[in-house]
Amino acid sequence: MLSDSIIDRGHVLARDTVNLYLDKPYFKKTSLKSSNDDGVFYSTFKNLAFNTLYYAKAYIQTRDKRIVYSDKILPLKMADGWLRVSNLPAGRAHLIGGNLSNSGYVSLGCADEDCLLTRFGSMRTTFRFDPLMDTLGQWTEVQDYNGIPTLGAISFTINNKLYVGLGDKSNGRYSSDIWAFDPSLNGNTGDWQLVDTFPAQAREGAVVFVINEKAYMGTGGIKDQNGNEVFYNDFYEYNPSAPRGSRWKTLANIPLKPGPNDAKTLLGRKNAVAFSINNIGYVGTGLYSNGDLRDFWAFDPSKNTWVEVDFLPGDPRRDALSFSLLNKGYVGMGYLAGNSTYLADLWEFNPLAAPGKQWRSRTPLLGGGRSNAAAFTLDNRAYIGGGRSIFIKNNNLEFLIFRDFWMYTPETN
Image (tube, rainbow, N blue to C red; front, side, top):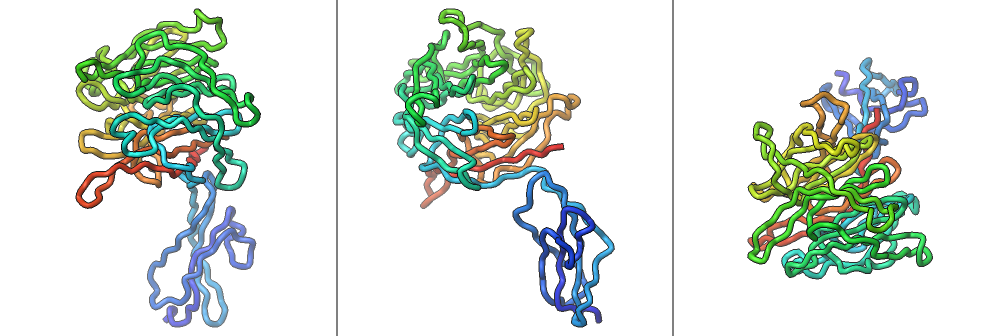
């Protein structure tokens, strides 16, 4: 039998078909040693580059040193995926994220269970992430946030400044402050300055996106004096370059649609997500008075109008994260209250696709389901980390606060 003469078998991998031989400069190979049968065998290749086309071919080596190759060549491509980078210096949930120049930043958030339960004790510590320090990146502590730290804040970047605003100050108090972090101040550690005040009801859980150096923010909610949830649907344009007194402009309210077959309403929402692509802003998901949502809406600042786009195909959710890369939007993770599930999925939105086909599923986060994580983008990659989940210990539910961070590389065509 052929199997009696086999001393090695495996697969050879190369970036072209010319080098799919063991005596050529191939990229990788597997060596599965001898075989006891003539059946199918499998190989695993690790640490392949994303968006790179490879070719694989099977081989066997006999005792008389002959190498026999398969006639079949299999093309392989890692379309998108995740790579773990350096951990946050400490676990953090409900944190904000943003990018300035070639660095990412995170700030605020809860570092312990008491903060999650009481919503008191949000952190002021701010960290800078530099991806070029080594292959995993490096975190450096910079200037602490100078305002009253909040949970459920918004963050955005304009003209190389990181803006942070709104949020829950605890005990029924909400912030309307807008702060800006300027990395050029105070040496290499930067500094925070109070720059403006939100023109409407202070709140938490709002969303924001940026188009042409203007921020568009709205939605969110509060708890009133009786502990009842109040949700907002108002939206505003903020131009930080304009003179004081003329920076804010009231916009059309965002609609809401509980289900694809329901009529649209003007109910408010909070803990939704937002991103922008090609001068259009997109807002969707979140929590409203009757539960979680998965509807999505496109806002055109030139027309001050909202238009319905495809619903997110996955579960309705709150406290998810979003970002945009290469003219596509991404939404993932979050919390599904219906069955107390922390999600790890990721969805890609293509505004140029036909209605009904605008979303497609991408590779889920490898670090596990979570909500209230942070995200920022650098060099056409997204960096995601922190957040919260729950686990069972001694028959009790306990909070898990993440400190892991991951780099996501999207598929490029």
